[in-house]
Each structure stands twice: as structure tokens, then as C-alpha cells.
Image (cartoon, rainbow, N blue to C red; front, side, top):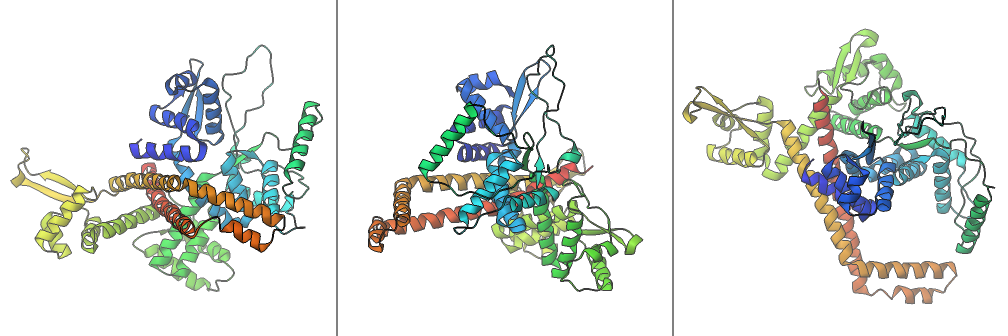
Length: 534
């Protein structure tokens, strides 16, 4: 765990959950597994605060617990899972793209709450969608429920593990911590709920208070409604499935850039056919026959079988080997080589960064080393056709930044420089790790910058919010245009300009965070796929 990762985790926890949760989360990331007593002693927080913070972290899958042999429970932070908070906007936007506004709000609610029952999600989303609709229109529970089922069918949401049902015996005390289990077959099975109803709009404050009092009184008198049919069946966002979708999109985009749109559509079809049957860590997709691919192509693509076979042969013969041929039955069996595709994407990212940072001639040397594996300085000068002095400077510059490495091969055991070969090479894995570390640093700096910008303009932001609230309430009561204009003029022209600048800067920072996260995703996926190779 590097310092950059710890700092970024700390900033993300503070931004989303507050100081107390951040303190405990960072403590667990730094120290590893710890029992409750140690967390209370070392953080200086009260037992109640620590328990509540751990509940929040466990609810959001950021901390796991484990029962030790000696009978006490230890809590461990999941640093990689904390870093996924950075990708929440991307998950939500993907759900919106695939399943419209309803899918977006379902994923957003699950990410905001960590775990929820299906009935609670459906009601909350229906209420939120009804709020945005015109007067007289409402969102039906059935429509939201159908979108939820589609998300479960495509594995974007999954069930949470449950406490196994066991016969209660008074002699055997319950364990200090429950063991949660789930059958893989049940992970995406949606309970049959007959959710009938429509979304409700927010009532006025008085009505809301009266409704809350009535609900409270019913609860105290034991008159509450029966628990929903899915009580105890909780759902969460399947982050690995979203990552699989992002990886597939990157591969399709790379094929489109290298070849053409039709080739990318063929690869997209292959990935779509195997997206649920292939695990996210598999090196290859399931083999697909040419006939199956032809039948599954989108209706708009009117290409004949012969042309499809030519495209598949072209893809299989490409040096990047994104698509491989695994057999001849059914007109030819083809797979998408996921690990090789990720390696190609990571290499392209490294090449792009070298070119942006050091210039096109350095990028030429870098690509040469990637192709030839090991070269002496003289060979680099000759192959790259760059003068000796410039080639030497470029190689040393990249060496100092850890983009290339130097390997010594001595002719004699004494390692005398005159009798030693010095070979330059590129270790893609170590370069990717170094770059990933820098990306974490960059994101942490961007978050700190955004916090500084908002803190510096805190007074102005509060004033702007107050004015907006007054305007909204006056518009609701039917105030005249002159009165509204007077309220608007409470914010002066220089202040309005300052607010515009702040908004523009914060939007730039947010966009930069998302762009850096795209690079982080490619590098992380490549490193994980390399480590999983047998």
C-alpha cells in the first residue's frame, strides 16, 4: 500500500462520509486487521462513534470482518474498494446510457446506501422520478421494477450474502460475528414481488410531520404493516460487471481506431454474446462460431456471411491478436483475447504519455525498445536514426523517470565496465505500476484543489444558495417579476463573475478526475490480468 493510495483513500472517505468515518477507515488501511478494542484505543474516539462508523463502512463494503480462532472479531479495510468511490459517477452514467433515467437512479440509490432491498429501491426511485415529472403524471412501480429486473439479468446488480437460516437452540449461544453465505445460482434471482403503486410527490412540511407522527404512533402500538415479501434480501451494485463493460468498451474503441467501424461492431457482438457467460478475470471469452456471430449481429448491419468471414480472418491475422481462432467447426471458432487486448491498451497508454511528456523522438525510441526488447545504446542510435548525443540524452531522461530500465550483462565475473553489455529495455509492468502511482497522486491533488477552491469561496456560495432559496419560495407563491429582479440583484456583477469562474474551475477539475480515472482503470486492469496469468 503506497502513501499516495492511503492519502487518496483518506480524501475520498472524508469527502463522502465525514471526519469520523475517515479517521477509522484511514487507521485500518494503515494498520491492517484490528479488533474493536484496539480501534477505540488508538483513534481516541468513543466506543459508540467507532461502532457507528464501522457499521457505515461495512454497509458500503469498505470494511470486512472476520472471526479469529481466539474468539474475537477483527475488522479490515478494503483499500481497493475505497478507491472505487472515485468511479461512482462513471457507474451511474453507464447505467443511464444503458437503462435510461430509471437505471441511473437505481444504481445511484444502491451506491448511496450501500445495500438496499428491491422494494425500497423501487419506491425511492419511483418517488424521485415522479418529482421530476409534470403535474398529474406519476411513475409506476412496475416500470421501475422491470428496469431493476433487467439490471439483475445482465448482472449489473447482485444479491448480498445472507446469514444462513439455522434452527435456534437455547443451549448454543450465537457466534460473535455471523458468517454470510450466498449460493452463486441465487445471486441474480429477483424475488417475485407484486409491487403495485405509483411514485409520490413530496408533501409540504406540515403534512410530512403529520405523516411521520402517524407512522411513529402505529409503530409504537404494533399496528405497522406487514414486512415486505423481500424483507432481508438485500442488493448491491456489481462493480466487477461494470468494469467488464468498461473493458469491453475500451477494446471495441481500440479495434475501431485500428481498423474500421464494422470490425469494431463484430468484436462488440462477440463480447456482448459472452458478457454473462465469461467471468471478469477470464483470459479469453467463450469460443463462438462464425455462424453464431452472424446470427447475433445487429439488424442494421447488412453484411453477408462471406464478408463477415473475411473480417474475422483479418482480425485473427492482426499482429495485436485481439481476436484469435480456436477451431474450424461451425465456420470457424473465434475468441477475444482479453489479456492481450489489455496489454495492448496499457502499452498504447504508456506510448502516448511518453510522447506527450518527452516528445515524438523519445516515443520513437520507446516504441523501438518495445519491439526489439533489448538494445545497446549504439543500436538505439542506428535503428532510431537519431544522433548519438540526442539519443543518449533521451535514453537517460526516460531512465531517470523509470520509463525504461538498464540491464547489465557481464562477459566476465568481475563486472568490469569495458567487458559488460549495457542493454536498454522496457518493463511494461513496472512502468505501468509507476504510472498508476502517479495517477493516484494526481487525483489526490485534484481533490485537494477542488476543496481549496470551494473553501475560499464558501461565503459567496452560501449567499448564492440563500438567494436561490428565496427566489424559489417567491416563485412558488406567485411573486411579481419586479420583486424577483430585486432579489436577484442581491448578488452583484463581480460576485456573479466570481461564481462563474468557480463553477468553470470545479467543472474542469471534475472532468480531469474522470480522465485520470480512465487511465487508472486501463493500468489497473492490465496489472491484475498480468498477475493472474499462470
